[in-house]
Image (cartoon, rainbow, N blue to C red; front, side):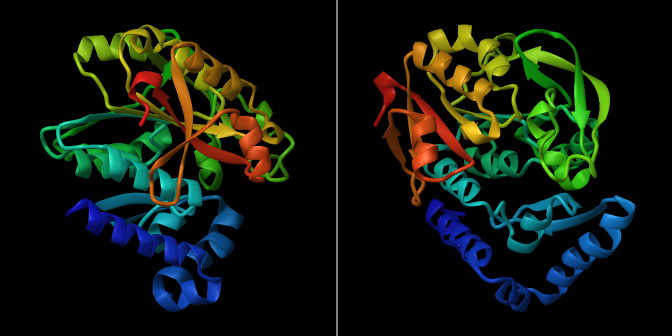
Length: 308
């Protein structure tokens, strides 16, 4: 599928996502009632997730767990505006033969999109710390020839870490630090379980694999600085683009600020992704989020000498 066709199909995802609930229901009534009734009548009472298979906008079959995968199930893609723009960015910048690193892959949506973009001569390495979530990621990637998935956290040390898994509805918030969520209304009703997981250092991983990624995506709910610290040697010598989720000050963004400062010290500039998937440079990230009234945003970091 050509990049133009992918963008065209992603625009349909965006159209569905921005429609009213009534219009979304009319577009796909069976899926809509299936997902919504399951979430409201079954999941909220029993907190038991349901596995389903759907087709993404890039025509790849994908395993999901409902209710957390509802947006992909109903639209064919992750439907938040920042995630739609991130997908457009990947379509614009990933080329056949490239390597993509997905840190915090969840079920593997962006990994599978990247797999399509880099073709069979490219590589995708996907990391998911949560064992429960990884089971679905593994189903999505195990038979994909150019994707390798790992049930590992990425940090600044090779170690055993304490990790918190939330019930499925909030599984995208799985984290090593739950303090950022303790004031949320849902936290008391959806308590996490504490487990032990293993972590690796990306500096060592990339050296061992002998790969040079074009883009590294980082979405790790408060462990961003640890990921960057464990990647700093590689970043001092190489210049992949870093696409990192960045929270507003209201959400608690100390780790994000420190990670961004580290990247700036390594010669990186900060960019936001526009509605066409292109990059626009900004100076102060937190100020930008405040001015735009955003709670979170995907910020792309590009080495100054490579900035377009």
